[in-house]
Length: 169
Image (cartoon, rainbow, N blue to C red; front, side, top):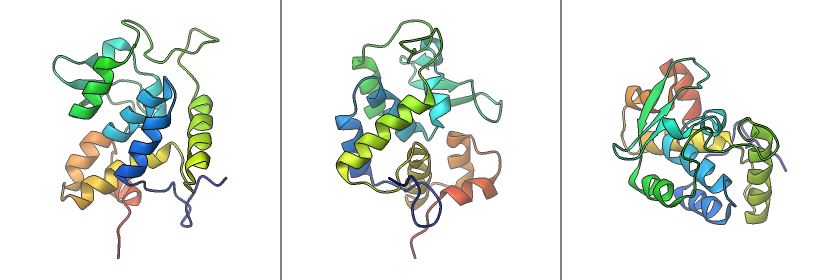
């Protein structure tokens, strides 16, 4: 199944599609997908989160293992906060530890889970990057300015961010 839409990018998902993916995902993928969907983070950033990166009391996530090497603190959406509070997550170390090593779960495991779910739901062109593109696009459609979106997603340039946003004609 292709993980790119017709324009060579990961498909932008509707909120309903994201909800369906999160609803049927197994643990810990459900939480990984929710974090990616609600924060626009890269999957690699989500899987490297530690319990110490979560501040549920103040409602923030601190991404420290970023592609740009710049830490980024993001507010936690109320729906995500509820999921995190009710999840059985480790109290220290990696939030999503690998069952085989002392490292975080692999990106490949996460991609494989999403591929299977997308196939089951009949979604085409979905990849782990779909969550990032979807949040960027949805915020833009709601009138959020590009600088604010970039501060959430961690894009260094507005030019790079604009490539993520799908604009309807």
